[in-house]
Structure formats: C-alpha cells, structure tokens
Length: 105
Image (cartoon, rainbow, N blue to C red):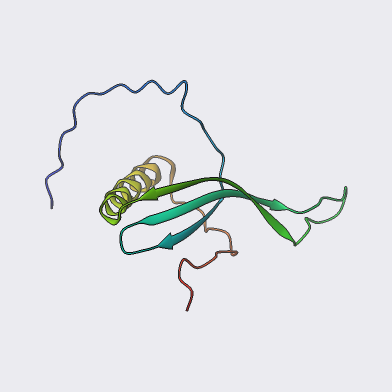
C-alpha cells in the first residue's frame, strides 16, 4: 500500500469563496487541459399536481480548467473522500439514470 503523505496544517478562510450548487457536469479534453463545465439541471417548467416536466434545462454556473496531472490528483482525492463518506454514512445510492457521456463516439 502506498504511504500517505502528511500535509502541513493550513487554515483557509472560506468566507469570500463563491459557492455553487451543481448537479450537472460536462467534460471536454484537449492535449493540455481538461475543462469541466458545471451547472444545475432542472425541469423546464412545473405544473402544480403534475409529474415533473421531462424536458430538462441546464443553467451553467462555472467552468474549471485544469491540467491532466492535477485532474489525476483530484481523482485520487475525490475517491478517498467518497471512501471516507461511505465508511461514515453508508454506501452511496445509485446515481441518476440521465448521465451524459464525457466522450462522443
């Protein structure tokens, strides 16, 4: 098993960091960058007493551009965080069935 590195004790003031709720992501890649576009998907309309409108719209929120090496580090951090979450709160539920592929074939 790989030895975990110790990080310095750093405190980050989060009061002025913008926070966005997102439930949609789309990824584009190039030789040098990975772009992740985050947004919030929601029904186009709502009628009281009816089922949710099947037409979904995505309200773009922010795009993050990172290099592939940093993306790989983020992947490891996210995986570790999910493992810790599941150890504390139980397994994640299945994700939504509407998943858009990061690759176009």
